[in-house]
Image (cartoon, rainbow, N blue to C red; front, side):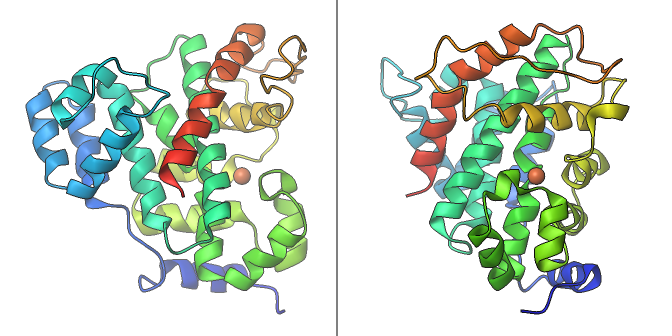
Length: 285
Ligand SMILES: [Fe+2]
């Protein structure tokens, strides 16, 4: 198989007959959720215009994980019970995942969903620990950071299959991908962010999340994503079957997170791993 060039990857991703677009409901909801003046009724009205999205949010809200005492049977109730932030996070996850549903293999999409939700949660936890409120950008950037993998799966399925045969996509690293197929998922992420018209900050995260932590002395969203991606490498060991194992996270000197309580961050993350499994299982059959 011929390796891909960066230019041909860019052309394929920008060819709008190949890739899905971001669902309109997710884009419209972004503005409403980020506007402090928005009312629950306005948001519910928008969501109800998309019955399949509404049905999926209710399904997740009624799942065992969220464990509501009474059945959530309307989007208004979901908004009140889950809260605006969680509903919005669910909406984003559903929107992004459903965009790729049916276009990539189910196993891959389930793994991508789980990985993306875990990194998104990690970003939120780090941002909280650092005392920051980024109105959800941290979660969104975490959720989208690896969508370059999905883009490669859609526009170059044979190349994607070769990558999957050669190891764990989420641990392989860009150098190995380049050696195997000529391009990597960070380049694909950059082109996807441009094609979807995502904010520059999100595009930066998609393009640079595997760079070294060495330069991350200042707190920023891309720095949070890099740390979250690096922490997510610990997650295989963080599983509930090893509750007493302690982890040591070594950060470069002067790193912005050096003073953060890592034990607490890892514990918070561990507490939410089941939620990521639940969401991935509910969304992808
Ligand atoms: Fe990645």
